[in-house]
Image 1: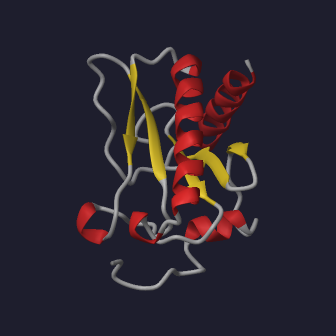
Image 2 (image 1 turned 90 degrees about the vertical axis):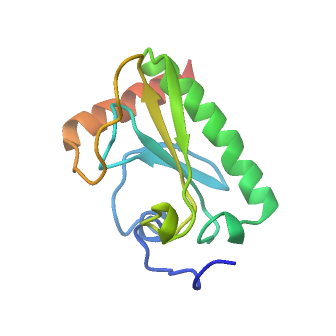
Length: 142
C-alpha cells in the first residue's frame, strides 16, 4: 500500500545504526524512543520500531504492538515529567498525511490546558532537549 520501498538511508534508520546521534530515552530489542529535535512542545519525543517499516501499512503486527506498548509507557513518563494535562499521540502515513520521515514513528507531545502546540520544522535548543530527555528518563525509572 505504501508509495515506495523502505529507504535504508532515512534519518531514523541512521539513528538506529548509530550514524546520527539522538537523545535516547528508552530502548529495548524492538523499539527506540528519543527526543524530537524539532519539538512542537517541551518534551516532544518519538517512538520507532527497530525493524524497517515505511509506515503502518508495512508494519508487522508484532512490531506495531511493541511500539504501541512503548508509546503508552513513554506517554505516562512524559505526563509525569512535565506535569502535563494530556498528551497528543500523532502518527502519519505517506506524504499526503504530512509524513516526512518514511520510517514508522509515533510522536508524543505533552500538552497543557490552553497551550497550543508549536509550529513544525523549527530546530529546538540542544541543551534543552537533552535536559528534557533526562526528565523523561528519570520518570521512566520511578
